[in-house]
Structures are given as structure tokens and as C-alpha cells.
Length: 356
Image (spheres, rainbow, N blue to C red):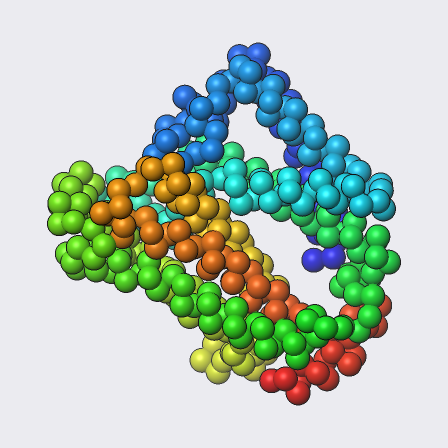
């Protein structure tokens, strides 16, 4: 993980320089502009740049990418505060605001579509290429750029504070960062992360059973007529979210630290912290940006109040995402123990044992 963070600034710079070239080429007429009229569904999923055209949009993309590249380079060279003040808003925009809910749908549907591609009927007519079209892949690249920029900012913050390059600590652990404290507020974060998606799950499971919970009967009939199997797909997403909630419990349970006995070949071994932290953080990001998409569309009047079940539960997803990210952070703070590079954390490890 330390190696990834240390190289993040270089990788971010390379990616943004690539987008400078892409933006200029799109403005000059090259194909592949991923927003606006080139997007097969710019309005249906609330794309923030649905109105953008290649010219002058390509030049704006190039200019924005140039600012991002300059910022990532400054993070590599400077110990000042200004690059950090610029980097964090840029990273947040790229990860949480620029993508729309299709990025979340692509991630969630990939396991299902990997199987249904071999089936006949309506399920077999939809493949991975339908959810991972170029505009959505472009969103994934933009989010990756934001994540790399955030990692570069973390590295720069550690240098500025004279913290350890590996763990970031300047002390063994103080205040809310101690394992004992993280164990307390981490449990609250996990509870919120587990409970929040259940509202969404209840509506989608009800629809799959033909119960118009939060919507009209006409809404369900229209869905069955226009897209057979859509409510089963919704139930799949709901089940996916519920199972994610069960896995989230592992962030505060013993089986989240030691593989349980039924896992042959792994039982009794300690769970590598990153095995839980990385997926939880990624899911937190895509859930948050999907929820922000629904909030943005709700504010602009894209939904009917009478059909609240189709959009209101999703508006709570940012709460879910923030809580899940906090739970992952608490898990990481609680399990990091003594740092192999700086030696800090011996007291923290003892506190962690007592907290459990």
C-alpha cells in the first residue's frame, strides 16, 4: 500500500496528461467524446455533463486535466498547503460528483452479467458491454484519476507533517485515531452502514413480489411491459446491498480479523486488513456518487413525488457511503498495530487488544 501511495502522484500526472491530449483531440474533431450527444443515455442517469459538446467542451476537459496534472506534480515537489487545498476538492469532484449512477450499476451488475451471458431469453440479451460502454468506462477512469490524486495528497500530507511515509503517524496514536477510540465510533459507523440500505432493499424486494411499495401499480406494470425482468434485477441489486451489509459487520466482528473455521485452507489465519479496507472504500465511493446523482436529479424535478419509492431510498445512499468509509477507516486504525517502518504503534496494539 505504501508503494501505491508513493507512486500515485506520478500515475495521476500521467493519466491527466493523457486527458489533456484527449480533450484537445476531441475539440479538433476526433471521435470518442464521452459526454453530451455521444453519450447513449446522458439525461436518463443524470450525467453532470449531458449538455457538453466536443467543441468547446474538449478544450475545457483539456484545461481541467491540465490543472489536475499541475496539482499532482506540485504534490510531488512541494511541502506547502496550497497544492493540498486544490487537490482535495479536485479529487472529490472526480470521484464523487462527475460519475453518475451507471458506474455503480456497472460494478453491481458485472457478477450477474458474467453468468447470464450464457443464458437464453431476456437475461442473455444483456452483456457486460451494455453496462460498460465507453462513457461509463470514461467515468471509471475519471474516478481512478481522482483516487490517485487523493492518494498523492495523502502522501504529501504525511511529508508536510513529518509523518511516517508508511503509516502517516507522528505519534503512537492519539485521540480519535487510537484503536480503542476507533472501536467505539467504528461500531456506530457500521450500524449506520448496515441499516441505511435496508430502506432501498425493502422497496425492490416488494416490487419483485408484485407489491407496489412506494410506487403505483401502473409503475410496476409499465416496468414489466417495457423491460421484462427489471424488477428481478432490482431485487438482485437489493440482495447485493444486503449481503454487503452482512460483510460490513465483519469490520467489527472477530471473523473480520480471523478467517472462520469453515473457510478451508484459510481458517485460523489473520485477515489481511487491506482485504476488507479496499473493497469497502471502493463501494463507499460508488454508493456515495450514485446517491448524489439521485439527489441532483431530485432537486431538478426529474422525479414524481407520488412515485417516491423509485428515488427517495437512493437519496440516502451518501449516508450509507460515508458511514461505510468511516467504518473502513475505523477498522484500519484498529488493526494497524506497530508500523514496520517507524516502529510506532506498540501502545496502540495493546489498546486494540483491550478494546476487543
